[in-house]
Length: 175
Image (cartoon, rainbow, N blue to C red; front, top):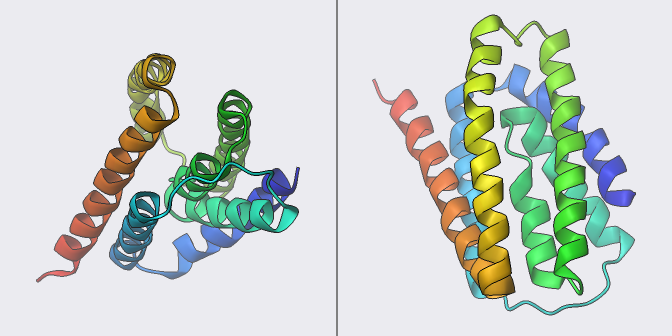
């Protein structure tokens, strides 16, 4: 619950950031942050332990802000769970449900702001099968290779998202 509530609080903050800052600036900031999270996943060793409310609040808030600002809520919570989970199955289910709810709130904010247009909905519909395929492949990967396989894939995918965001932001800032 602390993860969910703080994520819900962070989402409107992220949406406001989305409204205030230029898209290129946000992309650069998000790219740097996501690359730092990727580096943390490489440098920090997993230590399974029960999660305290403070860790959950901070991860949820960061997730909400990222989701509201640029639509990528996952990295802070994924990092927390990959590094601390005592029960990966429960953590994966919690992560999926929590991110779904935070993203749903972000979609509502974008709809209220008039940014949920027909082209955006069409792209979301086209992306849905790819997301479902990725989820299925992720589940197979986890079943076959466990926590270490999930961690390696998470690091690579998170780094790709961060580098892409950073590159697009820098490219948009160039004359």
